[in-house]
Structure formats: C-alpha cells, structure tokens
Length: 621
Image 1 (cartoon, rainbow, N blue to C red):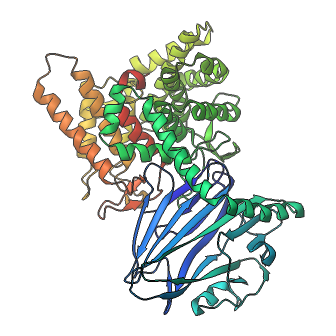
Image 2: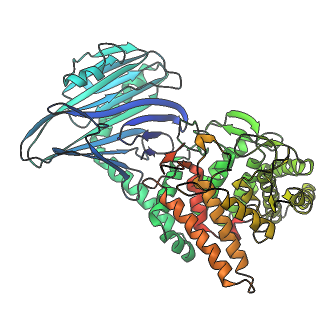
Image 3: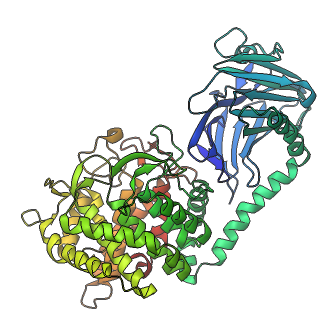
C-alpha cells in the first residue's frame, strides 16, 4: 500500500517501503516538493528500506493518521512511524531497530534525502551545521532543516549526479563528511553508529521542517533553532498526535444516532479510515483536494469531488470544515454563478472549461449540510452564492446548454448533468423555502425543474432499448453508470420507475470484469478500463434506494426485495474487499485486483461514507 500523513497545512506521501516520496507545502497540493527520502542499515553489507529481502508490512496505527511500516529479516525487526503533528509543520519519522539474534550487532543507520524543493526546482545549497547538528537545505524561497533526537555521528552533503553524491557513499558504508554542496539536485545523508545487544531495541527519530523563508537569513536561523524545540518535546508530539486523532474519532462517533451507529459498526475500521483520510485532504484555507496523487495529477479542487466529500463530512458532523469549504466556494464562484472545471487549492483557476454538473452538486451539498447541521445561519451566509448558482442552472436547463461531462472527456448535454441540474434546482428551492425568500428567481427555478422532469426525461429515454441514454446532444446511446445519478442522488427519475430499473439492470450486466465490480462504461480505456469504487457504490446506492422505495409498497413480493438486497450485499462487499489498509483507490485492475490510478481518492471514500449512512430522507433533494 501507500500512505498519506498531514495536518491541513502540509501533506506527505509515503510509499509502500516507508520512503517519503513527496510533500505539499505551504498548502495542500501546491507546491510539491519531491523528497526521495529513505533510510538504510549497514551491517555486513547495505540494506535499504526498499530491499526485497525485507518482509515489509504497512498499516496505520489504529484510529490515527500515524503510518507504521515494519521490516523484518533473520537478524533485525525494524519499524518506521511517520506522522505530522497537528500543531507543527514537521514530518517526523521514528525508526526503531531490534536485534533478533543471540549476538551483539554493530551497525550504521543512514537517513538519505534527495529533496527537490518547489514545483520547478532551483539551484540550492545543502549544508551540515555542526553547532546545530542539522542538515540545512535552501534555495532562496524554501528552506528545509533535518535533525534528530540522537547525536549524528557522520554526514555528507553532495550533488546527486557527481562523485560527491551521498547516495554513493552510503553504498560504501562510510560518509566523506563534505559539509556543503550546491547544485540543481543536491542530496545529503546523516548516520548513527548503533550497538545492539542480543534482543535489544534502539530508536532514532528524524525531524524534517520546511519553511518559506524567501531569502530572509533570520528565518534560516529560526528554522534551525526550532529543531531544538522539537527534540526537547518529541515524546509529547507523538502522544498529542495520537490522542488528537483518537479523540476526534470518539467525538464524531458519540454524535451519531443509534441507526447511524449500527450501520457504522458493520464495517467500523473502514468507516474510521475513510473519515480520517478525508480530513487529510481538507486544506485549512477551505479547499478540498481530490487526491494527493501526482500521476495522475489530482491534487486540485473539483467542486464535484468537493461536493461529495463535503456531504460525507457533513454526515460525520464536521460542520466547521464543511462551512470553510463553502466559504472557499463563495470566493471562487464566477459572476454568472458557475465554477470552472478545477482549481488550485488556493482558489486560482487551473482548468477553465465548464462542467455544469459541479454547480448542481454544490447546491445539493449545501442542502445536505443544512439538513445535518440545522444551521440556518449557514444558509443565510451562502444565500447570495446559492441564488447565483440556481439562476445559472435555470438558464442552462431551459436552453439545454452543453458542457463537458463529469468524466471530462466529451462535450454535450449529458444525462448525468441534467440530473445534477435538477438536483441543484430542487435543493435551491428548498433552501429558499427555509429562508422564506420570495425572489422572482424562485419561480424560474421551479419552472426549469418541472421542464426537466416533465419534458426532458422523455427525451433521454430510448424506447427501443428500454433504458436511458448517456447524452442528448450529440445523441450518445452508450451505457454509462453515471446515468444512475438521475435517480441517486438527484431524483430526477424515481428509483422505482420501470425505466430506471431497466437501466440499472443493463448497467449491471454490461460489466464482466474478472475481479468483479462496476466500471464507468464498457468502452472505457482510461488506464485500460477497470472497475471503479465510485461506480460500484453508485449502483449499490441505487439498489438500496430502490429497496427503500419498494418496501413501502405492500404489494411487492418479498422475493423481489430479497433479490435486490443480495445485489446490494455483493456490491458493498466488493467495495470493502478492494481497499488497501483502509485506503480506497480510484480503480481496481480488472484482472489483477490491485489499485490503479490515484490512491487514496477522496470521492471513493466519500461515496463509502454516504453509502454507510444511507438515510435517503436526508440525501435526496
């Protein structure tokens, strides 16, 4: 697996060998800083953390965002605990080594970094500062300081592509102690000499502090001084971080209703991990990152993903985070009421095409948050934004205005988009009633939603194929599992409408992957075409909604309900099966069953939480 650690200001990605791949600072998603930082031991030869002769296991410390990676061979048992304190922008790596043998073992422990700071790395300098026992790297904008709670025995500052490279010297087990190097790609290493008696365990902690110093020499001095503060309080940092996440979970669970708690307990660990993962994607400035992935590059804000994540966090009672996100939405909204395709986390537009479904999703998410929080002040604060967005939706509804689809592949008038427009309008109408608003616009919203319900639904239905099509203009008759969105969650078409039931049945039958699951559409070639967590849970939620609706009809045979309940169980179990230490990817390889594309993906975790919650009286506008 891989893991992420963070605190809302800074986020780091840890690979499956416990190496630090990259981090984001000063905000989530921007800028990226490539680390390539790992550790090794030298004992009768060199063993890197990623070597094949280790038996490596990785998981989070229970109920926290502290990542634990263990390494075992015949002689040693090692563990690396990686975390970022909620209060400080520090990556902390705690390494412990246990001697499994009956003999005393003399070894060297190395920590290596090949940090390239910033989106476009610049020439930088790396130095070992003996008085502070730290490695200092700086490039005119950023400075990084690396220290330890144990006296450093040796060091090396080099340039990766030269004979001074610290990587080359680690391979020899002896650092040359060059105290300074400059170049485009500098590297460094520090080492400790350890003597382990039989059965003995020793620990070394590494502290990595990054700062935006912008050429200010005084700030360089301050970052080195801060290492001493960290060392003096390192035990408290771990305990406070551990307690913070556990207390947050306990508080969240304590607010659940009896019915919510029963559903959560069905898969408690996955629910907790999904919640904790979503929190790491929330920037303190309000934006919500889709995923910390660089390949593909999803480290940005899409209002669609953000809307689903906001709903999930609302269901978890995270009002302050959700309301901060809507504050971000207010600041980024276009004058016409729309939002562009995606944004950098600081609100600067990144891709400026329009995807109309994101507007509807945002209004739906606002309504769901009100229903969970009962905070009328939230609606009043956001009324101007909601009104502008609903005015925009009423205009595009009656003109059947085209945009890009939710998969960002085609341009036209898409069935899913029409569903989201309807859901957004219905949400805005309900919000207006709650606030007792009498704007003339509300009648336009009502007329536009009725137009979609009474006239457009017939146009998107294929009589000869007994199902709904993917796009109205240009006409696209392909099956696409996002069509389910017109029923769940947007309710343009009732779940028990025979046309919707037939569509869902054909969507289910269209996918026959070796590993199971539901994809986007049968002809999909993105990453080879695979089942997605989102789409599998989408079909699950539709069938859950169908059962909920049919169960109110006493004439429905029990066998029919039981059939759909079995389908629900199979789909839900599949989504639970293909998680990796609790993390959910975008896709699962259709033959190998391994994660594909971004992991973790916020939308996947959000759909899981929404599925667990399953209260349609709250979720359906």
